[in-house]
Length: 182
Image (cartoon, rainbow, N blue to C red; front, side):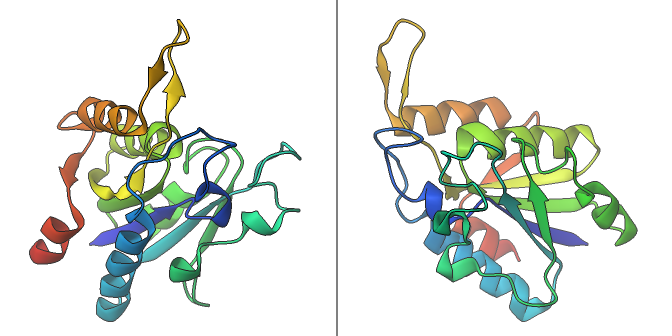
């Protein structure tokens, strides 16, 4: 059985500024919504992961309106919400136990951001023994400054993270590839 993990698809990660000056893949949330709708139609397991930052200045702090889920992926009553405050959906949560209890061996990962919670959660899911499919166009990254201050574009950050995860930790698909296979 396959479960969908929607990680940190919250209003506070949709804008540039706090996490980086540039963001790639502006359609990431739309693609997450398409995948979510397919899983809902098939009544397959869905888990929403919500980052609850402990930093009061973060857009993802529970006291801020930007902590809320993106409109296209708001959980329904029967869809579990896993709250976390670190960059892994598996640390300090009961996500692994939920998946194991349901007999889930395969997970599809979508969400934000590629270089933070997606990368960490993908690696951990794989290390915990789950078969991971990561959807490249249903996640996005922010630009960074390199160790010498050189700018690294959001698209480059995204591609490097996906390259690091490919084959060793996850199979990388696009939304269309996944929907065709399902």
